Image (tube, rainbow, N blue to C red; front, side, top):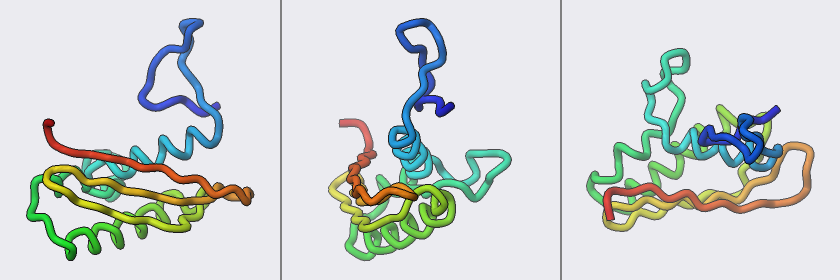
Length: 120
């Protein structure tokens, strides 16, 4: 059973679940928007992207973040997903991460865009 993220109830009043594809997307989102040290039993889990939103914007920062995110996704989700392409774009106080990936055991390529930022 894959519990949907964020946690909520389904129309029948039970804990909402999701399929495998949705669960993998949820896990990627959790990795991206968790800061290292936030999880007690996994202190090195997370990308730290939220800490960089208000930092100085530069191509070097985006390149470093791209490398860090790709390495982290490989470490934490390498058994369920194969990253095909990953790009990080930073504009003002918004960071967008575009990921193309394949689920383990599948030949279908999927794409997701995750965006985090400050107040509009």
